[in-house]
Image (cartoon, rainbow, N blue to C red; front, side, top):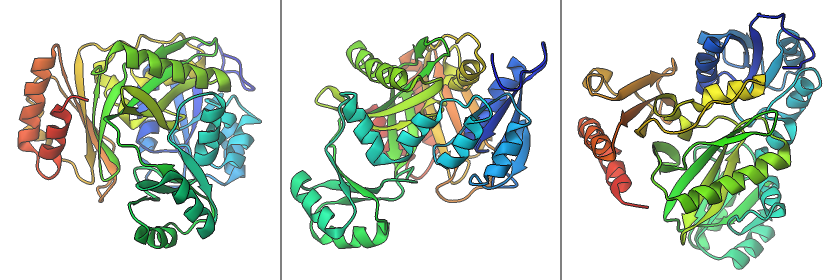
Amino acid sequence: MSSGKQSQEGAATRIGILGGGQLARMMGLAGIPLGCEFFILDPAADACAGAVGRLRQAAFSDTEAVRSLAADIDIATFDFENVPAESARAMAALRPFHPGVEALEACQDRLIEKQSLNDLGIPVPAYFPVGSRTDLLEAIDAIGFPAVLKTRRFGYDGKSQAVLRQHEDLELAWQRLSSPELILEAFVPFEAECSLLSVRSHQGEIKYWPLTRNLHANGILSLSQPGVFGPDLQREAEAISRRLMEHWAYVGVMAVELFVLDGKLLVNEIAPRVHNSGHWTIDGSVTSQFENHVRAICGLPLGETAMTGHSMMFNWIGELPDKHEFLATSGFHWHEYGKSARPGRKIGHATMVAKDAGALQERCQHIVDQLKGQWPKLWARMALKP
């Protein structure tokens, strides 16, 4: 590994992470056994990644804090894509910064992201930039109903967007989103939502995990199951990911979120980082997304990405169920993030693994039978073949 501040031979590789959420925490859990130390910058004094590294409390926009962090580390990465570009550039000027400023900036703005995909010949839903009420009317005339109005920046988990089904929805959505930088996208009547996680090394080697089916509730990922799509869609998704990674000379893990429509793929958005839909890889693949991200940015050989069996990931949102109900179930793996509970917050996940699909279904049914709220309906949806 080359860096502006080389670790001594045999010393731990010091990795800085801009962002201290659960993704940074799981990077640390994967990287510590590889001989890495973690230095984390986050505005929250109780950021959950503080459990795996040295936490520096500062705003992401505090470029002086970013430069101070750079003095302690060998390489840097991030765990969410809303790190200010100025801070990212400040870090990149001092230390190797992966996956890189160009990919980060492109994925921070939905319009730039869509334009980048178009330029590379990658299919996306129809879209129009919206900066005024007049733009919105012209865009809806071009796209038609239904459509989705989104802020160009800072939206995630279904936030900062509104589905438009009739003209009466336009003014309310305009007032609620309250931004001069919006984008209108065609509503996609998808057959399934899925994501592909990939990892690229410094040398340009790329490995792919199996295409993963995702189900959302209230805009937040709730269930993920890998390996349920055929080889044609897997190859199509891999070609999309490769094109993006090579375009950006990408290093690290990237997630591409996709719609399946008429047996083909449309890109919804890109996450230039490790991703919620890849949590199953911790327990269900040879090498997790978190370990491979650390391997990639440190210049280590990439690990294999094959499934070790069949998996299902349950995302715990807002509150944790009673784990005593489940831990005795064979193949069940529990992960808490050390975050306080509140509505809409990701505070943990669990993965069920089994050697065959039938056993997975039986074990998951046992879990769902103990859960309340949305889970029985979500499970019924997951049982439908995409």
